[in-house]
Image: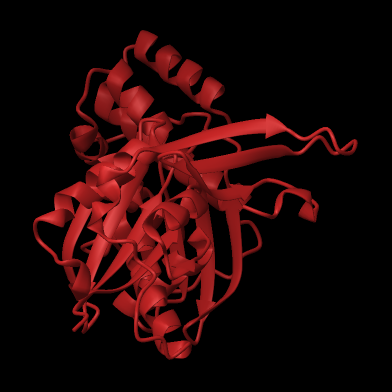
Length: 319
C-alpha cells in the first residue's frame, strides 16, 4: 500500500528531495549541491533513501526545477511541473491564506502573487546573479565568513552603509570601497542585504500587489539579514517556513499525488530505487534539417536511448 510521495527539485545550485507521507507531512528531506552533475546527484539522493523505503511504499513521484525533465525521465515521474507552480502549491499547503511568495534560490529569484489559493501573477529572474544565493556565497567566501553566519553579521549592524545593488559587479566593487574606507563588516553586510532587497523589489516585484501573509522561501531564506531587510522595506512580518529550502520538492510531491488521484491510476510510474544501479548519460548534437539548428539532447540509460528533447519539429520525436 503506497504510504509516501516523492518530490525532486533539480536546480543549478542544489538538488532537493522531499518525502511526504499520506497526510502530506514531510517525513524526510535531502539537500545536495548539484555541482554541475545532476545525473550523479539525483542518483546519490535516491541512494540515500533506498535503505529507508521500499518501492511498493512510493505512491507517486513529481519533479521540478531547471532539471525537471531530466529528473522526470530518470525517475519515471508521474508529473513534471515548473518551479512557479510547485513553489506556489507548497506555500499554500503550509499557509493556506498566503498572498505573496518571495523565493530566492542559488541562481534565480521569483515572486508569486497568490489569491484564494491560486497563483495569479508571478515574475522570475534567471539572468542576473545580483540578489541570488550564489552571489551571497561568493561574498561570504571573499570575506572568509561561513555562509551560515552571514545573516547574523547583518543583524549586528548599528548603521548600515549604502551599497549599490543593481549589479553584482558594482555591488562587489562598492563593498570593497566601503572596506577600504574602514567600515566594519556588519555595516557592510547589512548594507548588502538592504541593497539586494531593494534590487528585488524595484525590479522583480515592480508593479506586483504585495500583501500579507508573505512567505520567504528558497535557500536564501536561511539568511536572517535578508529576511529583516524585507521586513524593513515592506513594513510587514515575513514568514520563513520550517522547510524553506525544499519547498519546490514539496510542491512536486503534492502535485504528483494529485495527478495519480486525478487520473485514477493505481500505480506510480516510479522506476524504483534501483535506478542507482544504472548508468545514465547525456549526449547532444545540432540538427542540420533546417535553419533553426536545434540542439537535440539524448538521454541514455546504460546503452538504451530513453528520452530525447530540444527539437522544434517532430523529426526527432521517435525514441
